[in-house]
Length: 448
Image (cartoon, rainbow, N blue to C red; front, side, top):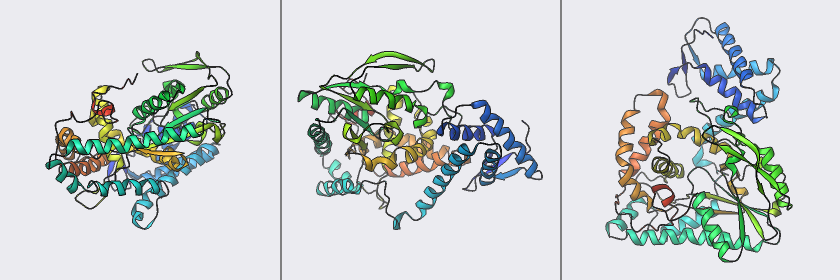
C-alpha cells in the first residue's frame, strides 16, 4: 500500500523511516497473545491503519509513534477486534509505566527484585572484597584470580545444594521441577548440576524438552525487526503443555511433539513419555514461572526454581553493574562459540529480548520456591579480555545511527564498565563444569 508518511518520530526524538510491517507485526503479536494466529487479517488491519494515517495526516511526511498507536487502537476497536485492542492497549500501557518507573526508580521499591537474596549476595561480596570493581581489580592484581574463582563457585554450588535439599523435603508430593530464568542466566548447567546431585541421592528424572512445543514457524509472532520471536511464551503451545503436564503428573502416558528447527515445522504425537512413581519431571524453560505455562498444575506438585546472575558489585561510577549486561555478554559469547551467530546481531536484538523478559519472565521471579544466583565476580575480568575491543568498536559504529539507539546505549555502558576492569586471559582456573563454561566453551558438561 502507498503512503505519504515517510518518517516516524520516536519517543526519544529520533527520526526513523516509516515501516508498515512493524504495524502488522504489532497487531499480530497482540492477536497471538489472545489466541489468534491469522497473519492475513493482521496485514489487512495494518492496511486500514495506513489508510487512516493517510486520511488524517495528509499534509505532512512525519508522524509521531504515539499517533500511530492511537490509530491502531481505533482501527482494532472499530473493526470488531476488542480483545486484540485490549491486549495492545495493555502492552502499550505497560511500556509507558516501565519508562516512567525508570525516572523515579531511586524512590520506588521494585517488586520484581528478590531483595532477601540480594542482601545475602551483597553481604557475601563485601566480606570477600568483591563489592566494587576497584576491590576486584586489587585482588586480581595481587594474583588472587584463582582464589576468586574458587570462592565464587562455592557460593553458587551452595545455592544448588540448598535447592536440591528443598526439593528432597517435598518429594512426597512433587512430580516436577521447573528451572526458569531470563536468557543466559545459566539454566542448562544448573539443571544438569541439580540432576547430578539428586541422582547421587537415588532419585530418577525425565527431562521435558519444551522447544518441541513451539508452534510452526509461520505462526510465530515477529519482533520489530521482522525476525521470528522465539522469546515470547506465545510462541509455545501453552494449552498442549498444560494438558501434558497434568497427565504426566497423574501417571498417564503422553505423546510429546517434535519440532524441527531446520524446517520450522512441528509434528504432533511423536515420542511417548510416562513418569514412573519414583521419577520427577525436569523442565528447563525461559517461561517456567509464566502463569499460563502450568496453570492447571497444583502448587504442591511443582517446585519452581528461578535463576539470575544477581551480581552485587558497583562500577567506578558508583552504580551497581546491571545483570542484563552480564547476560548480554554471556549470550554473545555463547552464540558466537556454539551457534556461529555474530555477537553484533545479539547486541542489536537484545532490547527486544529484554522487553520480553520484563513482561513475561522477571515479574514472576518472586513466585519461585527458591532463587539461585549464577553470578560469578570473576567473569568480568574474563569478559574484559575477550570483549573490550568489540564493545569499543560498537560504541563508535552506532553513535550516529538513530535506528540502533538501544544498541549504542548498551555498547557504551558495557564498554565504560569493561575498560575499568583488569583483564584476565588465563582461564585454566575456571572449573570445566562451571556455569561460565556454558558460555565461554570448554565445558565437561553434556548439553545435548
